[in-house]
Length: 306
Image (cartoon, rainbow, N blue to C red; front, side):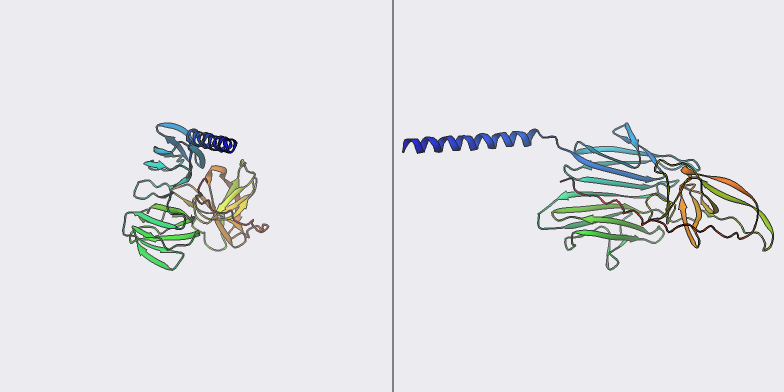
């Protein structure tokens, strides 16, 4: 009987020791939070006054409040920097995206973060700047910001925010069971179109055609976007050394509009492209036919770090 008691005491002692060891390991285990930052055009990133890189940027940091500053790399008109304070949460990744304009009012962007809630729930909070914007979730559910719902399924969702006098903003998010997703979306004030297009000469005349030559890139190709922004959907790819007729130029970002395939138009960044003269050509030249473009890449969505 005494031996059984002794064995029992030993087992209890071992259990307590193991529990304490696990507690100590968990207590001293480094706590981390994730952060992902992207912008159009690319920008230099400062966190708490220290330059840490340029967009796109992904890293892990200590949870807590950070002071973030983004300074856009503008080769044309000066663009407004972005300053904000963000709280990084342990175990999840916070996403910051910025589309720079010449003023804060003409800039747009989003901050997407997660917060742990009841494991059986999924929650979505949408906040807009300015508030009282109309939001449509997955093309059907309509509401006005600020808006919160606990009746949303885990998975990918599309948010469309509109407001009189402001540009429409589309945001892709991915909700998760056991987390509240908060999307803070800034809308850009509408302004006169900045698109400039070459004026076509009279039919039958000749002109000096301007083309765009694709320069060398780190990836060996250059993405073609639906709009002049790195946040826009990818519609195709072009390769260094190829030339395309210039269809237009965005004054704010400096991006070029080209016909990358017959009947298909898109935008490319001026960072890896330059204007060249194609000589004197007859008007309305036939665009070159290219192979079908690859499947567009998936949009980055924030994911808990668990």
